[in-house]
Amino acid sequence: MLSNDELARWDRDSFMHPSTHLAQFARGEAPQRIITGGEGCHITDRDGNRLLDGFAGLYCVNVGYGRTQIAEAIAKQAHELAYYHAYAGHGSEASITLAKMVMDRAPEGMARAYFGLGGSDANETNIKLIWYYNNILGRPEKKKIISRWRGYHGSGLMTGSLTGLDLFHKKFDLPLAQVIHTEAPYYLRRPDASMSEGEFTGYCVRQLEALIEAEGPDTIAAFIGEPVLGTGGIVPPPAGYWQAIQGVLDAHDILLVADEVVTGFGRLGTMFGSDHYGMKPDLITSAKGLTSAYAPLSASIVGQRMWDVLARGTDENGVMGHGWTYSAHPIGAAAGIANLKLIDELGLVENAGTVGAYLNRRMAEELGDHPHVGEVRGEGMLCAVELVADREARRFFDPSEGKGAKVVAAMLKRGVIARAMPQGDIIGLAPPLCLSEAEADQIVETTREAVREVLG
Ligand code: PLP
Image (tube, rainbow, N blue to C red; front, top):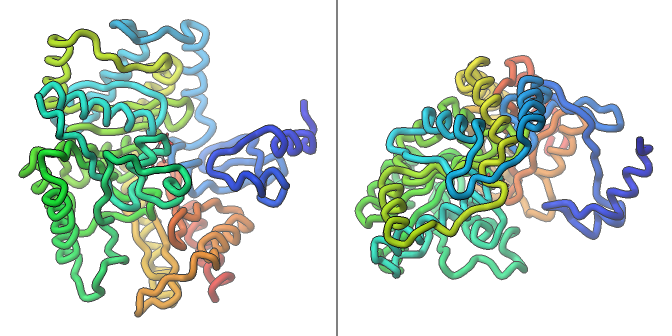
């Protein structure tokens, strides 16, 4: 057993953490937290703090911490068969069963599930499948992908390009040329304050149409979007958005990828965000909620119209050269089965809808009128409080003031974890789907106190 001090030193000296200020961390200037356990919506750290996790890790521990059913399923699978690959028609009982369970839950019109390890690799797979699809259809020019500013789709080369946040591009030579970005459906940041939500949707549609026209519809393969913008600020779309966007895509034979890494498997109070907004995707990206992060696993869910062409492609060209060693890993699949069963048994999709609505309503009641709160917004078990310098003028704080991070730090002091979203002063909340009303009250009360402490 390591002493805490040794662990802390090893951490600073050996471990390059993701999404971290590397130099400050190595010098001991940035905080360090070593997590030791979790139960329900709470985690504990090595210093003995018990914290209410209002962000479910990285909006992924949907069933909550400490679920022994999933731990036991993982252990059983590891004893029986820890690994075999899925290439050339191989599989395990777990991976086949999970594929069936995913397809039983997927929106109408979906045909197959391809398993990877995380959201980034699933989106990487999706883009390759789209390019393959258009090559099989004899449309080699139709390859560009439209994403939205503030979208988040991962941090690989292609997926980091799809992501529309400066932090993920700066100094990485991204985005790659095949990726172009369009307007974020972010009503608070609409270009003209007098626009109604419907008018802003019309504006987003016109921006998309103009981009497609400028680039040439024959060069555009797909549009990718999260049903609700996540890391870009937790922003539900303006009224009528998805229906209107779908119309533009259909008119130009452009595929739709619904990135449901956050929304898949219940977070919006429906099994998928596509069901929630009536989207008709050709591909769905899912990861986090598939296993509630008890093991790494993603699923690219392929729609029928793509599946038919992909299958034809292999008849014409032979085996599809795409796969990872750990595709459909049996341990991840066992975790996924136990997780999806638990979501059903505990009624967590429904709970996300009801307690999520309660959380959003209570937050709006407590903070909606605060002079430095521009908006309280959310959908299902997602909630955000956006801070502004001037509410009437929609003037935002200078990012260097770090107001959002200060509020999140003040919340942490009071025992609640929220996330300072990376672009803007936005306090993000995405608790486990098993959150109770009492826990929602604690989150709201803590946010209110922290906002008062920092902003008066
Ligand atoms: N897509 C969305 C919508 C996400 O929120 C994320 C991660 O937060 C990803 C993709 C990338 O997933 P991962 O971090 O598992 O690669």
